[in-house]
Amino acid sequence: MKADYKLAAKKAYEILNEYNIKKLPIDIFSIIDSYKNIELCSFSEIQSKFKYTKKDIKMCLGSKLGAVINKNNKYIIYYNDKIGLQTSRFTIAHEFAHIILGHFYKAKTNVLVHNLNNKVLEYEANCFARNILAPVFAFKSAPTNTLLQILCDISWKATRTRLSFYETDIYYYKAYESEEAKKFLNF
Image 1 (cartoon, helix red, strand yellow):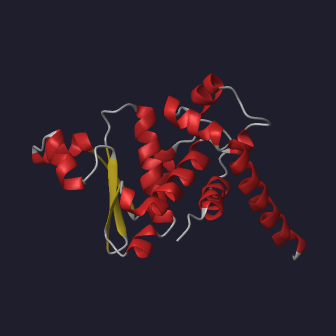
Image 2 (cartoon, helix red, strand yellow):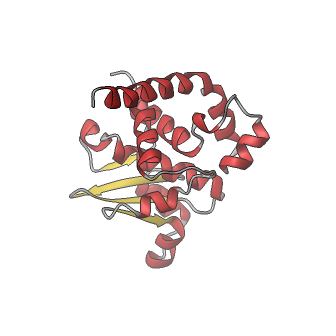
């Protein structure tokens, strides 16, 4: 199975359009808050409520960054809130992508964590996350590293990744834009 980057980018753009988001940085917390079947839970909350250590959480969730669990189409996104807001935002967007892209059904599981055994799902989730947090259409041309990092409030690593996939994601955005235009042409 090959990663469907076009679908991942399209879903990110659809959400940005649906919520009529016109400014940076993208508030991923507000977007997710609007979904009644998705909850966010920080590692700090888990530590406080259950008296777990960081090691316990990593052992239970299988990741030091985050995970998402599906229970009867109700989802909980767990994220490490001690690794910096920028990295937390990307992790949340990545885990959100697993829900939006139907990865639970593709993987036939109720728990998704960073899993190198299923690189396709991880690549798609990363594509979605970079396109929702740092959409290519927000810039007329590839911005500088510093400008992108500041405006989109993303980590240095996410900034480098966004820029390395800039041209590819422009292609996916233009394909999405073309599909949207066709809807109106057929009206």
